[in-house]
Length: 208
Image (cartoon, rainbow, N blue to C red; front, side):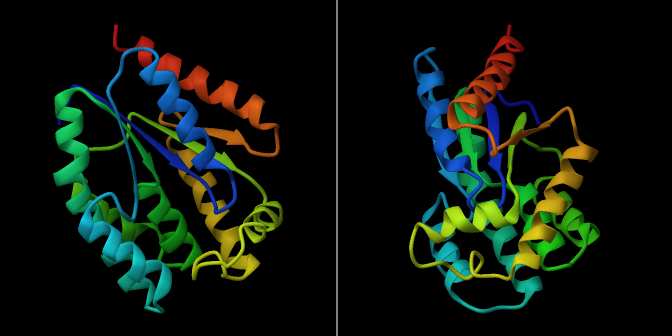
């Protein structure tokens, strides 16, 4: 699939700080004359936001979680992501398919094979140009999330669930090291931001 823009995804367990750095990348790219679309999953479309409400607020089976998020993902790709990339925009997305591998494949223990089958069906020839994975221990992440107030259904899961999610993310990074860059969120925000922008600058340079 030949598209003119670039697709960057931001991943990590809840509390790892990915959302903070999306804004930094947005500012960085805008200053360099790029058109930027910021979006999220589940979400990004009217249907996706409705699915997000169900996903975070209603109890359901792990299989239903995976199917719901991929249904919303296809809608998101067709209506937001692919048209933006085709126009030459840079799309910054808070979570994508790596999150499903991590949360449903790892956390819910569905395994990677089922998630991979869905990914092949929904976006067989399409993957992010760059994925930034913000890594943090589940204990430290839980402390950060607790400071936000009321937790959603996923954030409220036991520590072992979040350990499985983190492990699955790291397995993904090990399997695809050229696409996924792991960034330790144990470091200061300024240090992490500098590393993030170096990665984005390298992707910018690859356009030339």
